[in-house]
Length: 166
Image (cartoon, rainbow, N blue to C red):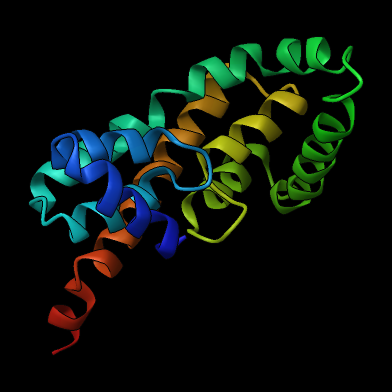
């Protein structure tokens, strides 16, 4: 993820403002707020600006995923090219759902909040949608999960952990 974030910082960051670069990276699957905070640190965006930008960027696509992903997947499966890709995505998301077995809300919040590869708001939204979770419950769990992930990644990306420990 760091190399991808560095690529965006070096390439996109040359053409648009640092804040817009952070916002765009935070919108993207895989990178999300984690990548956005790495990019913001690389582009020297003040943490007080970076955190709200990353949260907004990470949260913005979530309602659309929760509401429309199943319909989009069903439509894409009609095409031979997309069928195996969508099936793999669905299977991967359903494997991740076992991490949420201890209660949908808390499981989803922890799944989104722990900044590990394959977790995050995009995958959490996909899992919640495929499991037909209540929209309000899923949205709140994902939002609070993004806050937790942002807090963790802020400490890591801005070197606050070193300041706290010393």
